[in-house]
Length: 251
Image (cartoon, rainbow, N blue to C red; front, side, top):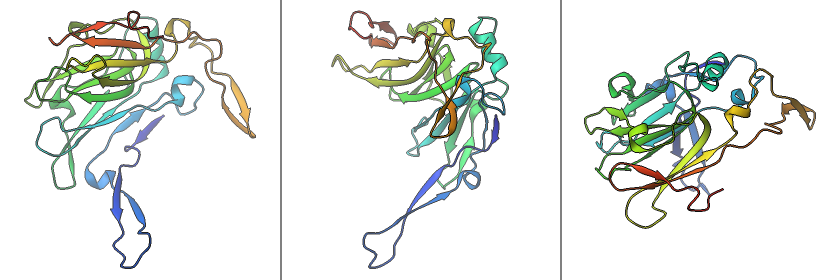
C-alpha cells in the first residue's frame, strides 16, 4: 500500500492551565506543516503476505551536528520486487528507498535525501544511528529484507555505504532491528542485528494463512518457517567488524 505522508509526527505540548492537577498532555499532528512528506510503500493495497503486515523504521539523529535533531525514514517495497530480491535476481523499490529530513531549527524540516546520498534498494525494516567509527559523526545502519546497509557519515552532509568493506554479512536475509553497544568494554561500539525468518524457506508464492482472533481475521505468522539467526559483530576499532556470533554463544 502506498500512503501519502508519514504516519503522524507527534508534537508534545504541555498544558499550562493554572491549578490543573495533574497537568494534561496534548498531542498535535504536525508532519505536513513541518515539511515532512514521504511516500511509504508496504506491499499492495490488500495485505496478503507477511512482509506487508510490517511497516518500516525511522531514526532520530543530528547527522550534521548543528544541535538540531534530524529524521531518517526507511521505506519498504512491493511484493514483486521482494520476490526478485529473494531469488537473487535484482533489487530496488517502487519508490524512494529512504528519506533524510534536515531539521532547520525553526520547527520545519528540509528533505535532503538526494544530496545526502542515502539510498535503500531493498525492503527496509529498521534504522539505527551511532558513531561506530568514533569520528564524532553519527552513522546509520539500515536493516532490510535483503542486505543490511551501513552508511558512514562523511562529515560534509553526505554518506557512503560501507557495509561490505566494514565486514557486514553479504547473505540475503530478513533482519528487523539492530542495536549498537560496547559489549566487550573496549570503547568501540559493537553491533547486534536481529533476524526474523530465513528467506530461503519463505514461500512468497503463497499468501500468509489467516487465523481468527476474537472474531477478527489476523495473520497466523510464519508457521513452520525456519528462523533467521541473530548476528553479533565486534567492532575492531579500525572501521571494520568481525562476526563473533558463534564465539559469543549467541543463538
